[in-house]
Length: 394
Ligand SMILES: [Zn+2]
Ligand SMILES: [Zn+2]
Image (tube, rainbow, N blue to C red):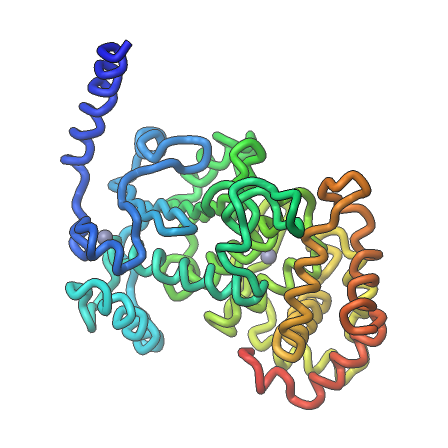
């Protein structure tokens, strides 16, 4: 028995060792454990991605090279090449590189472009920063989540990653065709635009992005779009993805966090995926201010009734974003409890239940603020008129 196991191990380890040798070594962390630890990187090896190993991804979706990075809460698989640096964006990029250089001394200060390894290291760094931002918004920390559901404590889902059992994954494809083949391989549907998926048996969420269109080609446009998709994935995961969160709340939050990276950026949701939208109102603050001034803003009660993104429409999206910003900026502590209540509803048997979410929202507004949806509309209008957006993050 011992001998047989040893043989199996040898058989498995030989090809892996050969692959590791073939694998291009990262020139920044040099895969040195102490440098990697400083940069928050656990591994560059092709680990598990989706329902496959990273090696299978390499074999089935051939591109010049896949690069992998795993951090405490995320895994990225990227087939992307170099990214140009927009002159108008140089200051922001150099500030990010300076943060990375604190851990990795070989990171250049004024590169002409971002090479693929720099890009994955920046994604790893910004991904973890974004995870921390999201946890702060929910007012939770890693220690609040245990590997299994605990029956002796308030309900927090069933895993260590906001309530899911495994890490969040982001797969960046160099072509739409590869993205279509990849999404079809686990969901059965070849999808055109960015796509999010929950693997029920594996209890993890994945984002797949076709990085083909001009507006996603460089990191300036790509990162806010990834953040939008991760916001949806994180909120769905919170206390385990057992039912869809209310559309206005989910979309309002994703837009708000996307715009913290770039106020001009906007991702819209369609039938089969999300798309970085270049035709949306460029200035959401102006659009929200105008809606309030005209008295034509949709009511929160209408937003709460929307069952999909198309029902929100442009005015609904702007209003959902603006109300979200109001709750985050002026009522952060109660907003965190509001999200926690909506994501963690249990039925009489103690099982997660998405029953009557409009009713649940009304109940939580009453409990936390003593507000009706009409009171929210009124308080939000006062906040917008008083220049609330100018004092917040956007
Ligand atoms: Zn590295
Ligand atoms: Zn969205």
